Length: 102
Image (cartoon, rainbow, N blue to C red; front, side, top):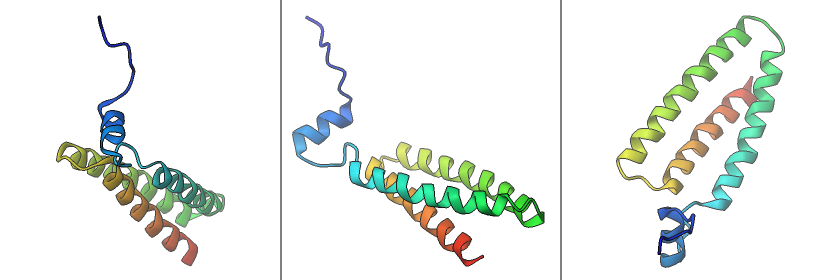
């Protein structure tokens, strides 16, 4: 009889080990909240439509591509979702700090 459960290996790991490494829900939620503040700060900066806004748009795209490659490399190297989310949170915190200073 085939297994009809739609649980991922990460879900099984979290249940069997009692860990939150399957997916760190709290850290993921915090990343969403923190990223929304960076989006707000970037929208404010981009709304000026000046040369600094153009630089910010280019920086935003290059940062996102670099972060995606970093996350994929980490995942392929065996990093846990918790580690990858923590690294994204570090990127978001750095952007929040930089954008708040301007």
